[in-house]
Amino acid sequence: MNKIALLTVTIALSINAPAFAHDLGAAADLDGDSAPNAMGIQMCTGPHMTVTRSRPQTPQDLERAHDVIDTLRRVLAKYRDSRVALSEGYQIFLPTVPQEVYHFTDYSAAQQEYMGNSDPARPGSLLYVKNSSGDYVLVGAMYSAPADYTPEQLDAIIPLSVAHWHAHTNICLPNGITLDDVLRGDVGAGRIDEPGMIPVSSSPSAPEINQRLGFLADGRFGFTGKIADSAACEAAGGHLLKQAFGWMVHVYPFNGDDLKVAFGMGVPKPPSN
Image (tube, rainbow, N blue to C red):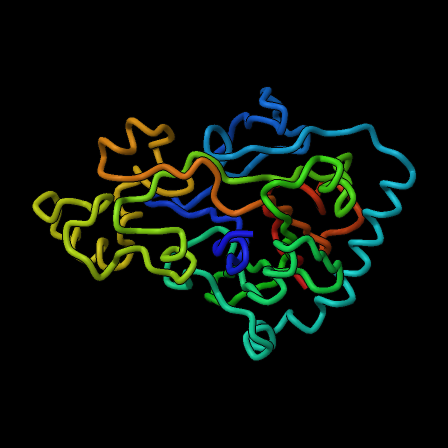
């Protein structure tokens, strides 16, 4: 197990300027084919994401899936107040960068997941969205697994018949920025002329944008960036990661019992109550 695998907080990074939103489209499945998610892939799909292929459902799969939802409804209740999560050691990934969904991660729990020790009652990350008042609203949780896990091993955690595990692939980072830097929230915002920044001569607002977003400012780099191959990445002053982090799956247990919503890849709207 390498250093990143041991220390990583496995977050489904859905960030990149200027959109900060999940793309729509087809994603490569675990066997390398094109397999659009029947439940609606609404994450950063395409060359930057690989998803597992669906399997036929069994009654046992449905029972296991509902057990996961019931468990999360029970154990996540106290985290509706995001301050409780923070007090228990969860940390917000890139809190100053606008995101569709914010990951509050327990590094210890995430490390255990990356070592193959998954605990349904202690997910590595909690998922929040911001409401119109800027408050964090709990919508779900994320489980992770080692990058070398097989479909059978992933299925043993969350059934592939109800969920699509995903992995982030072909990620271009600027030279001088490592995956460890990103995990620590360092996007090069304090640097000058970092690849991926907007040229200061192009706009009066460029310095402020660069200071806030670093290499995410111009949309070429990162987890939803325009660059997805080694040659283009090197030409732009970066280095390509064939896969960043391991396997991940989101679960949204609060929007009823529809498994397509609970295990879908689109972020559901939080309940009104």
